Structures are given as C-alpha cells and as structure tokens.
Length: 174
Image (cartoon, rainbow, N blue to C red; front, side, top):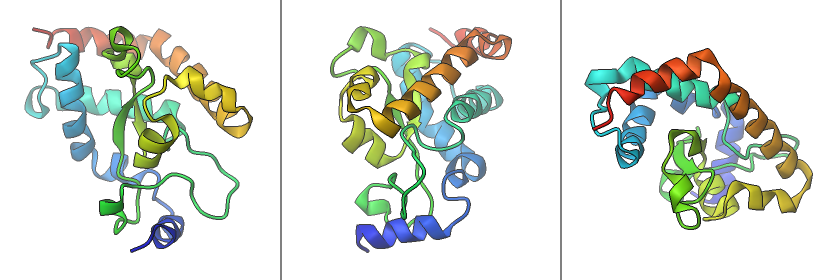
C-alpha cells in the first residue's frame, strides 16, 4: 500500500484517532512500560498496576484532545500516519515520544511528564529528535497546536488526579 492509500483509509475510519488508545489500551500500556522502567519505575507491570497505567495513558491522551501530539485539522487527508509496515491499519498506531528529546536533553527526557502519544510521522518526521519548544519556530497551526497541548498538560500536572497517580506510581520505583 502507498502512503496516500493509508491516509485515505485513516480518513474513512471515524475512530482512526482513538481506536488504538480506547480499544487497544493493553498494547499502548505495554509500550509505555519500557519507558517507565527507564525512568526508574522498575516494578511496573500490566498485572501489578494496569488500572494506574490505564489512567495515566488516558490523562495524557485527553490533554492531546484524544489525538496525536501534532494532529491538526483542516486538510483533505490526515497529516498524521503510521510507519510503512503499519500502512495496512486504518487507525493510528500510537508510539511514545519525548517532548524534550533524549538525544538533546537527556537529563530532562527521562520523566513521566516528558512522554506523549505520537503517530510515527509526528515522532520521526515532525519532531525528529528536536525538543518540542524548537518546533514553535515553525509558527502557524503547528505552534498553536503545541501551545494548546502544553497548556493542557501543565494544568493536568497540577491536578489532584495526576498527583495521586504519580504518588501511586512512585511505589513502583526501585
């Protein structure tokens, strides 16, 4: 399949932005666990803290308006898509990205608040190892999207719900 066909298939699926997170949460949680372990939460596992991880995924996804980090509207076909080996899918297969790149900001990269849900295109082509603030220079709709998501994330991180989740997550640090 070619990219245009993949984008058309995405466009024809009303749940292409949410299917992977809402209907395939176990896969998304499974891909989160290695990132959490790298941060120091070595005790996390789907059997020990599935509900906690589920809540963290949903809280972060909600701050992104239930779509990829750099998703923008107003084009004929979606501007977020999967890796070529997943072009047969009619939904975004999310991957975890780092707002502050571990290639540039290693000290800041390994924190839960640095993780976001990206499409492969967002992660590999748009951000491509840059820190998220570096993308603001492009301006326009991308800068507006980033600003909106970052504001929602700041509000989330101040919330009681987030603080409670992180406090519970701390019990899995070893």
